[in-house]
Amino acid sequence: MGRQPCCDKVGVKKGPWTPEEDIILVSYIQEHGPGNWRAVPTKTGLLRCSKSCRLRWTNYLRPGIKRGNFTENEEKMIIHLQALLGNRWAAIASYLPQRTDNDIKNYWNTHLKKRLKKLQGNGSYSRDGVSAKSTYQISRGQWERKLQTDIHMAKKALSDALSPEKPSGSAEFEPFNGTGSTSYAKPSGYASSTENIAKLLKGWMRNPLKMADSSEEGTDPIKEDKNSKEMDEGVQSVLGFEPLDSSISDISQSMSPEASLSQYESKPNLNAQTQLSLLEEWLFDEAVNQGKDYQLCDLALDENVNFF
DNA sequence: AATCTCCTCAACCGCCGCACG
DNA sequence: ACGTGCGGCGGTTGAGGAGAT
Image 1 (cartoon, rainbow, N blue to C red):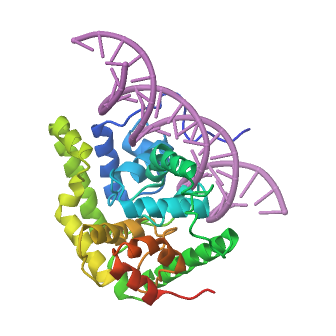
Image 2: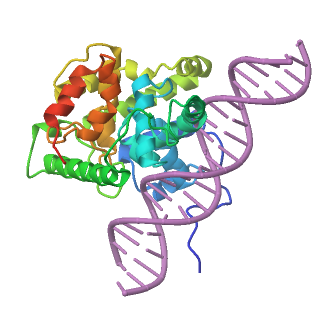
Image 3: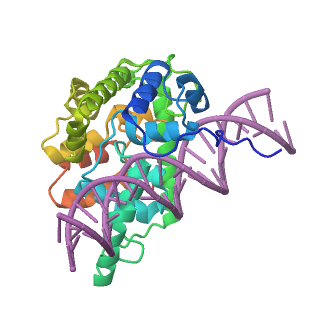
């Protein structure tokens, strides 16, 4: 009596999702929220495995996802974090809230790994991808422990902030439950985002080529929507600064509260009680050296808790 | 213009950990 | 304490696109 398969292998559709399927899934999640994936195929009539539904949502349809065109800072963060954490893509993705673990994994495998290999050949990088000039006294084990502490503290701070007994200004952005393990309260921000996706998909159905083109150009139609503006404003209110330029904006967007909160079970964020720790300071060192992201780094330093 | 090769990335597979009864 | 089921994660695959010949 082995484990029941997650889905019947017979009659389950595989392969690329169609816009129609996306709409069905998005509509369902808009109404019920993400979670209880096992019920999704039966409730929606989708001939898809529950895992496939979850994956499609988390990697593609979820609001706040940024696609394509990794910025230089994102690349550096990925390289640093990969060196630090290894192939723990979900953990790495927790520091790039707008990127999915799948995206980061793909980007690493297709771009960064090769590039680092080349650089290693030139002697610019050490074996594990960390710049050779950076000799860190702190062991990887210590970093990992501290990272876990960071995440734990962020989770605790967030759950404190969001608990109904302790209303807080930082709870301005209601989380939606990415894990589906608890009941779902539909926040307005999330709902409007999902509406946007539904609109997007409707547009896609009407004019698939045009939509495909725009996505290929790296333009995220969702960003064009007013919800995106709301997100930005939210980011600014949380971060307490206005992005100076596109690179700053990139980072602030990567710290989007919606995206962060959507995975708040595992993602640290820049909430009032959530500190950017030495890790983040370290990650942004190079950007700071390039004269970028001063404000974000300052924030990191201000909020920093000294663990050592 | 046709064919081949390489690259990208969405999606699948299987394992693992956790929650729950 | 144990078994079961679900969700999550990382590795891998393969279809389709882009570029080279």
